[in-house]
Length: 401
Image (tube, rainbow, N blue to C red; front, side, top):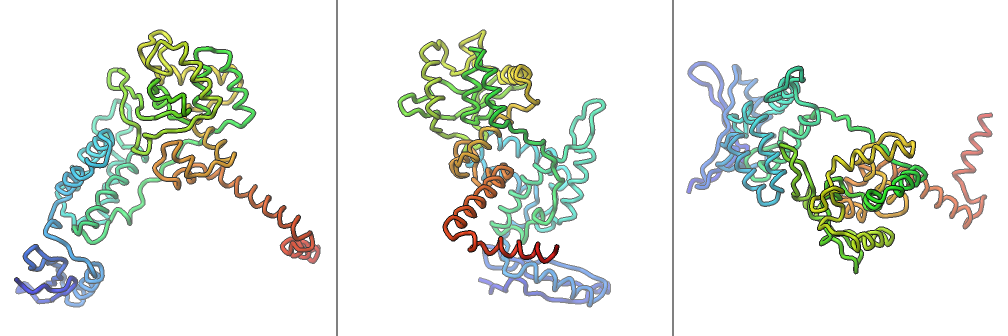
């Protein structure tokens, strides 16, 4: 077997045409022979500088033969690997984004040749004219949110390539994707929530639906997809295992939850469990919340959205989205002392850190209240004279007047 040369080892020579050529070892084949990266420059000094940069970049890296893959080949391979862990809908979303918006522009480029500039240029192209078939009058470019999502998928794929020894660094980690301006979160206050529930209580068709939503924080598709088999009245639990979404043509279908963490079992508040127990006694439908005109069919999420708007008008409350009811539940739960990890499990979030990031407005208020409680406790325990931060502040104020 050939003797392995360390990665980063380089050599320099002058070519017959007068240019300078350098090469460094960036990995090894299965038989132990070296994989080289070649560089060219007009002068020895220029080449030496470039070689030094490349040697530093490949220090401690040992690529495999598969590093010769093109980006398109690797993305196909990566999607096959991810099929074992991703939901089918998520996998199809990734596949469509990469096939339509990445491969046509960068698919033939080798993994090791992919640069930060390539990705920046790609994102600019997509923002300007990335739509496949724009409608008349529609902006031909993709929205910042869509391009951001493509970047996130590409970052995952290239990170996996780095982990498997196919490229030295992930260029997507050095690119700032387009900034996404999220819609403002609107949360009902305690008083507004009581006004809203008072309005819904007057409607026997919808009162249990909205009460359950405000005490569980389920996504719209999840609450509409609940069946009586999901409700354990003895344990007062609700299993969330499906979501309703609309297919092309307007047909409602039940599918998997948004994420694997979305498939969960939650413990219901006693008042909510009591309502569902009473509702079940008079139900003739397999669905907990069924279509009022067709009990054999689930509740249409669109109808729930329109009813929300109606009750907001009746209660003279500000316009909010259905998802803001979920935000209202989460905010009230955190403010009531539910810890972030428990709340993440109830909401179906993959990580508690995401829950905290989403509801920073609440956690900030909680920290302020915690500081006030601790401060009050110390004052009670140590006495006013043992609050040096107050003494210092007061002394400073007195000195300044």
